[in-house]
Image (cartoon, rainbow, N blue to C red; front, side, top):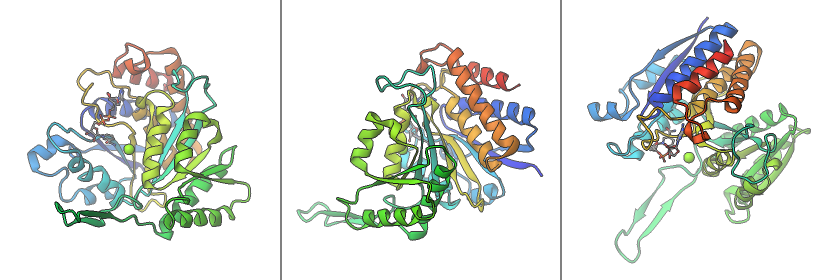
Length: 358
Ligand code: NAI
Ligand code: MG
């Protein structure tokens, strides 16, 4: 049986990096004999909004439901559509309605990439941020009252469920157990946020009991961000709520050079729904049209997709590893895009990586 992949390129440089992701995907599928088929969808972008007044057709969920995975470029074109409209009208619908409750972001320093942290070498920065992706601080529960008066007040609730915490923690501990360091850091703030965060601490301690060989370290989010910069070698798997994870998963990749390298996976591990794989970056209107976007974040996201589709095993795992190897060799020997100090164009990098897989 062939696994089916839905392809949505989105806006801006999403349209430039997606063809390179596909190029590498096709090369990997050929080399490792992976049974895959792709289907392209021309919606979930701001031109579609201009024509239809919404980001996606009404039956988007039915159209995508039967796929095994979604490859996504980037969405957003603030000159024509406000960001909260484009994002909530597409990507956030996918994450929530397909219950992609894990947002997984590897943070790794590659050899040959100038590290903004002084004195760091490859190997010093190699961890995962595991962000809760469906609940927490990102709710529409609340409101503004007495607006415009001297009694003006605003209330916004955060919602955490036991099921939501446990499934996030289980994923983080399973991942840590599969790695050599076997270490989980919980991003917390139980000294200041005195109800929900002590509860998270307890949930994590309870989960840790099931993993006697994994060490749990709870760190308050303020010092944790400082240590991402000062002591990145302390980290292996970092579990975080939606808000904390959002912040950490931009900070982490920033410490490893360019955002043009950072991939992400939005996972529904039970496979009740398709999972979604996308670069961390957005549509980059400032460089769109010049073909200088770095396609590596997109290509690494393809590798994460193959690893997930194959459950981390067999030819799928080999394909993942081969793509990541081809990426790191290409970073070292070029060509590279301007964000890495090179003069290569987007397709030059995609072709070089695909050729290493042939
Ligand atoms: P951005 O990630 O698009 O760009 C930030 C900076 O990084 C820009 O200077 C850009 O040129 C550079 N950059 C980004 N990707 C690059 C790549 N592959 N190669 C080289 N340089 C790269 O973030 P920004 O400017 O805040 O947002 C632009 C639009 O993208 C907005 O509409 C925003 O809402 C949307 N966005 C969408 C995301 C998604 O689809 N997941 C994530 C982040 C932003
Ligand atoms: Mg973010």
